[in-house]
Image (cartoon, rainbow, N blue to C red):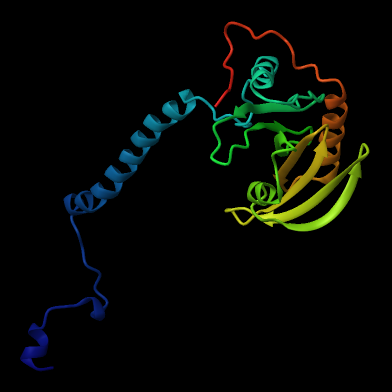
Length: 221
């Protein structure tokens, strides 16, 4: 062996493991330990905050509507009896009278959560003032799909897409001198039939004549 080979330092490749001092090991492990401690402290701070935060409403559509008052006020402003049937297990999300329309066709509008947790919007206007253009506008130019008879009324059933690319079904019928449009996305036909039947029977003997209370919002727009 030459003198150069005898004086060459040993390397890891020669099978010699590098040695580190306890202080060096402590410095190497410190960042990992600090990161773990920081994460534990962060979780300890977040958990109480999440625990104390109010839980989100699982049913955001459950708004309170003073239906008798709103329907009464709408009836006073309209030329027809507004449809305000109350079905068992259903819930009104909103009810309002839409006035001062650009086309001079004012209308009654409600939204209801059905017994099967779907959502149906209803619009009602004076049939002597509505026309095919108004209906096409209110139904977003939905294409005719079928026809259905419910409670003696022939309903024109149309389908179309909304801005969320959801399929929307529309029921259009003439009830007691008014044009009624009901619509919703992914709503079963049984829900539409139930509301259609309720509207037809309600219009035979409207009961939305309760005197308005002093603390309720009229919903007039």
